[in-house]
Image (cartoon, rainbow, N blue to C red; front, side, top):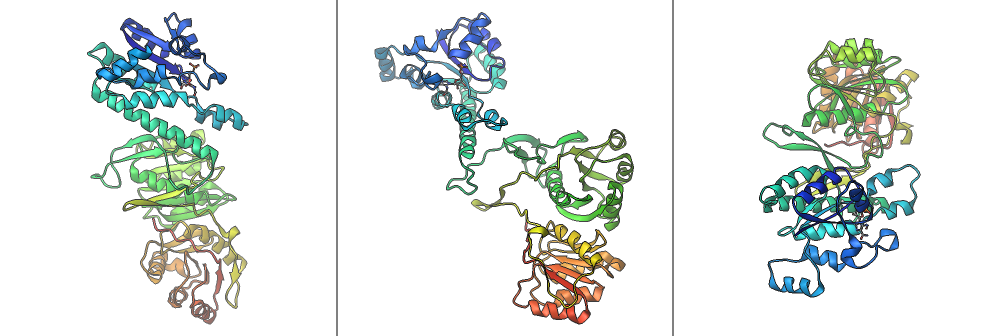
Length: 508
Ligand SMILES: NC(=O)c1ncn([C@@H]2O[C@H](COP(=O)(O)O)[C@@H](O)[C@H]2O)c1NC=O
């Protein structure tokens, strides 16, 4: 007679599955709670203690951890010495194992959970059985996900679960137990750079392709969201997000999250902001972002940091956008935007910080890990470097431009007027080049604008270029050996320059 061991915390579908196993001639062995559930529905069950001849002890900490179970799981029944050993100890082989684990993730996320409660929810016997059965998948079928019950039953009803399927199920087990252990380790310490970096992510979405159509891709999300994230966003309308959409949306969300005291609108293309504006109303903020660069925004990603109202929705619906991100949409705004077939509408909570304590990027044979650049002007030591300090209006513009330049790929220069960008020079190999691009983009708006630079000026040439274009104030980290050249150039032109003492390189 075939034997199945069922021991599950998540009892979804277990009764129906067990009934089908019974019909297919399986004897069912179960642990306490699973046994009670099955028996309550009329399934015949052999208790685990009848198999082990040992009671469940230590509040269930030890119930299946017994040679009568693990011998049955690990034996190779077609090998004479294994058969003999089993016979000698009166152990019978187990053909099917159905185990899902104590809900550690759900428990550790519970509000006010005690450490003792979390620790008690670290499953020991379950992973041991899963791993034993998975190792022995040549003989044993192992199931840990209720979503696999139907397919496994189908296999049983046909000619038995095929070896290839058993191998897949075994691999799923090892991935699952590994991910489970990582959650436990991350709960026990908050080490960001441990000796062995074990990251686990859950597949959120298959993607049609990657950055280009000939690249394959998928979107994974962290199993535990500590704060609102893009991965946890709700999509209210539109086609599935593409790889580039997700990347751009992340860049837009990161930048718009910089503005918490004022309504802000950010337009992004290829992960760089092309237009950023703030205002008393969201409509005004978006009008500024649009005016900043009404060409590049086409086909772009727009992120807004307040509830989208009907008026803003009307303005947004006049242009082709790939993705729109906001914390909420009014009923009317949603109705207006949903008429646009192609725009993807995302609702993302922005009240808290984004949950990206680790930023990773892959390099050949490894990856780089750092924490996120969360620093802003409030963390910087701002000093006036020039004879003339900024006017109140210039300070306001500089304070606006600084968080924007932080989100532009290096070398980055941003020109701003009032509280909107007028020119963005991104990803250039030299800083003057970035300044020239920003100035050209600004056109006549360069006159009377302010300039922000993500890193210091190695020479006086960027200041000279800015002065020629009519820039009146500059914000930059300072710290170059040749700072004095830039200061002299600024003083000579009578413009203001402040140093932040903090650089914001962004390379990817
Ligand atoms: N201690 C053991 O020997 C043991 N054996 C199985 N478990 C777990 O006990 C749970 C099922 O328990 P019950 O059938 O009593 O509801 C399963 O999640 C299973 O993974 C165990 N519990 C924790 O380690």
